[in-house]
Image (cartoon, rainbow, N blue to C red; front, top):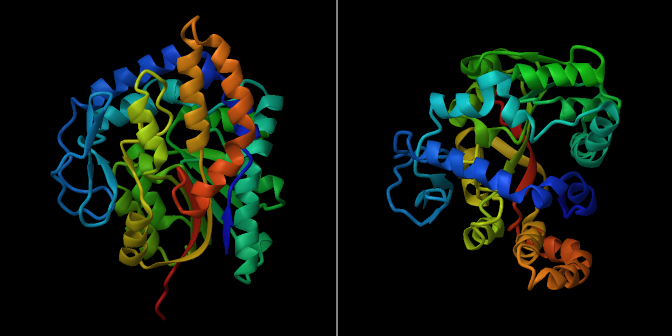
Length: 348
């Protein structure tokens, strides 16, 4: 089962601050990039654990290396305890949560409906196409954040769902918005052991693998957990967005920055599936590359009185074409994101 493309309008409506607060967001990223370069050097690939040494390019002062073995894009430094604590844990992860939370229930519901319910429906449809009855299965969402995906799963009619999150701020928001305790917290260092013990048929990692310090250990724990049959992932990809960001380094870097210190590629995902015994059941390729191009040029044009008139013309020209242009990339598996339903191979 394969699906391509996704309308850009809902996401654009939720990301107006990317346009309006470019300078402040960029400064935050520059600060995180500086902190990242103070960490120990990364000498092994985050995906396949092979050696990496040759720098491919630099962005915001950070060097990046493409793994010669699996094609994964790696930042040159480790996402250390200090770096991850600054991003996700300090002050309950409040700074990180600002990018992923909504201020009130109506805004929370709209974000859930516009962005996360389509992800949940794709999972339900893919499981049904595989011959499963989604309503009878149990689900565990790791890195549940503010509970959007848990809420989306509930909106599709599923009931046996638990969310797990390291940020107290985000978990509290999730439980407040949903009206009951659907997301529980755990220590950052307990993620792998929790994956090895969780009783769930389906585990989801929506925008999570790229943030983990030891993603390979988590995948091994899930593989060895016989209760888990399916893994549903969403990961950012090494895509045209990376090159757009490299060309527009005075524009907020949505994709390869902050907690995204490495990016998957289709080849590194294939390596991961082979190593950890998973089959690709369903895939949804879509991305924000053309939105990034549109935003980057618009922000640059809007910054000067001499080109503000061109900004309006650019919007009128580009905005109606974003979805068709993006789908062309998606169908070539060049999108900035992919959702995959994977099934563990179980030997009797």
